[in-house]
Figure 1: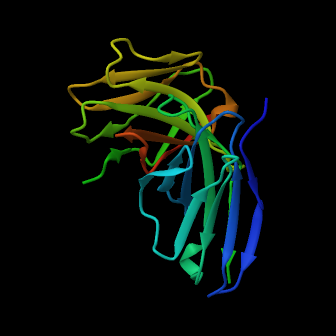
Figure 2 (figure 1 turned 120 degrees about the vertical axis):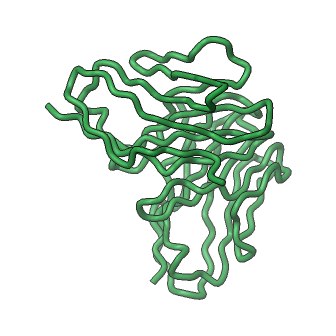
Figure 3 (figure 1 turned 135 degrees about the vertical axis):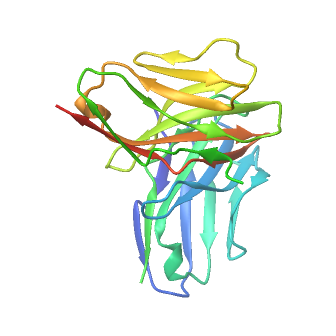
Amino acid sequence: AAGVIQSPRHLIKEKRETATLKCYPIPRHDTVYWYQQGPGQDPQFLISFYEKMQSDKGSIPDRFSAQQFSDYHSELNMSSLELGDSALYFCASSLELAHEQFFGPGTRLTVL
Amino acid sequence: AQKITQTQPGMFVQEKEAVTLDCTYDTSDPSYGLFWYKQPSSGEMIFLIYQGSYDQQNATEGRYSLNFQKARKSANLVISASQLGDSAMYFCAMREGANQFYFGTGTSLTVIP
C-alpha cells in the first residue's frame, strides 16, 4: 500500500540558509500535518492543512511557512535556519478527523 | 500545563510478560482522541492504537490494549506477551479540537530476553 512520502530524507544546510521539505500524502488523504522532533525529544506539532487550507497551527516559528497544493502535497519552507532547527521533520496524513495519522519516514535536517 | 504526561522515561520487561505504559492527559474539550505510537531506533513513527473520548469500550489491537479511565484522564497502553521487537520508544498523543495534536515525552521500553 502507498505510504506517505517525504523528500529529501536527509538535508544538510548552513546557518541562515533556507530549506524546503516536501510531503506527499497517501492518495485520497486530505489532511497533512507537520511535526518537528529534536534529538531525544517528543514530536512537536507545527501546523496542519485540510483541503489545502491551514487547519491548525502549533509551535511553528515565524521563519517557517507551509502550504498544501492542489494535488494535496505539502511543502514546509524554512528560512534563516538556526542550529536549533536541526531535527527530524515528520509529515503525516489522514482523512479528516479519522482516527489514524500515517507518518512519513521523516526528513533529517542538520544545520551546521 | 502539560497536555500529555508520560511519567516513565524507561521501562524494562521480560520477554513474554505484559507491560503497562502510563499516560495521563489534560483537556477541557469534551471531544478528543488518544493515540499510542511506537518509534523504533530507525526513527519511523508507527500507529498502534486509538481511543475516542466517547468510546465506551477500551480499544484493543492485537497484543495492544488501551486502559481508558476517563474520570482519571488516563490512557495507559498495555502490551501483552512482549516480544524483543517491541523494544522502542512509545509516545502517547492526544488530538484536541479538529487537528491539534500533542505528544508526551515518551517511554523507552526494553524487552529483555
